[in-house]
Amino acid sequence: MLRRTYHIALALAAAALAPAAAQAGFYSGDDLYAVCTADKEGKDYFEKSYECLGYISGAVDAFNTTREANKLKSCIPGDVTINQLRTTTVTYLSRNPIDRKKSASSQVFAATRKAWPCPTAKPAAKKTSRKKR
Image (cartoon, rainbow, N blue to C red; front, side):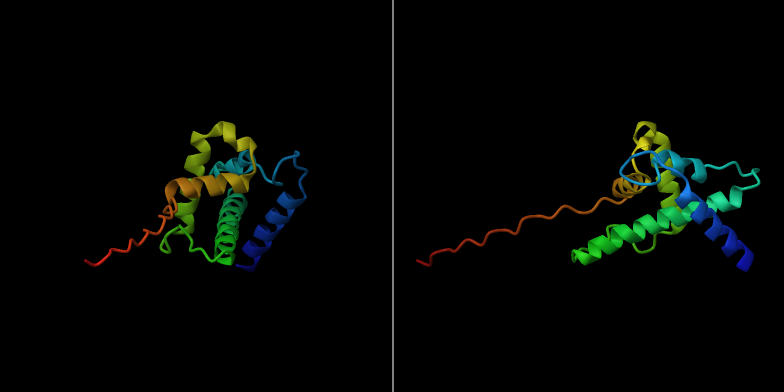
């Protein structure tokens, strides 16, 4: 288990140090899609799988922390698994290849918002006073 943790940490560190094109984030949707769709027969499949899951779960945690800081609840149901988040994100990325040039975090955000949209706030109904006759 310790060896697996070491490989995960090493993969994430390597990804963080890799040069990135100028964009809103260090990791593009293309980068995320590549690690999330790695060949299961490839020698680095497990590292890429953990990199994929780690990135997506970290991005979702960051979104939820921001919502919490703004006194808002998460729109993602509490029983959603990390694998469901991965499937949702990969499906979104595969269907929106043109958007994969954008930051990976914006693509995770878009994928989760499409799958689990936040309810729109309804304006409070105005109380009308009725005159008694």
